[in-house]
Length: 87
Image (cartoon, rainbow, N blue to C red):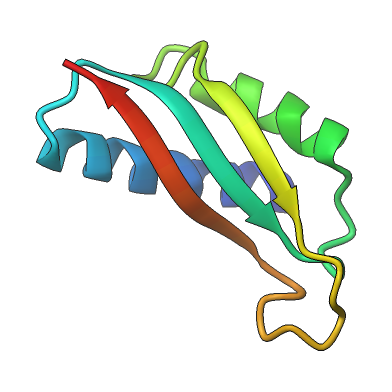
């Protein structure tokens, strides 16, 4: 499943950033979703919640920014824009 492998990569990226910041948990994540990704924000939230279970990002608030410009160089991508961490 495409979403599963994408979420695995995203969780690796989140955990790596959190480790560099000596965080004990991730409290918030902001993703930018391109208009051409063919995944709805609700569907992305479901996959994120499943992928985050048992990780440092479990129960993190997820914010999604929807890119609406099909000419954007990121129109077919989901990008990690920011994470908020705790101690």
